[in-house]
Image 1 (cartoon, rainbow, N blue to C red):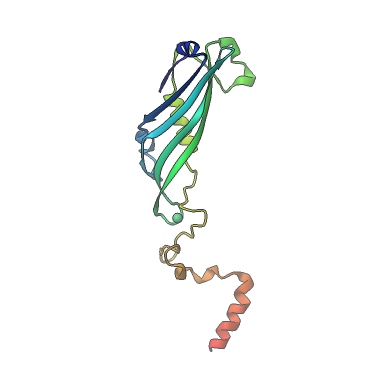
Image 2 (image 1 turned 135 degrees about the horizontal axis):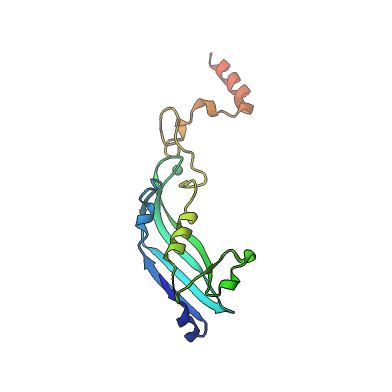
Length: 170
Ligand SMILES: [Zn+2]
């Protein structure tokens, strides 16, 4: 996505952009992401005192592999986006290190958008926060077959009760 900073001035300093972009190439080395639909980019650019502030939301419907149960699940990621640009080299002082100094009138937002998408991916994807994962011995999916829970999972506080029950069976 290209943004012409000079054009901004002729739009009373504010412009909204909505665009779709194919970002599938970002996930070629990511085995956690099995499919990604086109990224929806919705941003607003505003210029104020020589600084262009671009902010908005990146929406990515994608399919991931759950790190616990290894099933595939779909999720619609909503990733906040914000970057600031200026053509004034004197503005790039230490307390504004998130401000990018550019030399051209046209900024290519693509690398910034792609970086935000990669940072917005789930670090450890899980299908649901309650996902029970797999039985480490049998590989059975515990979400589908809760009876496959290994015996070692008995709460130690209940272990005494379990012993009594076992005794009763004898
Ligand atoms: Zn899962």
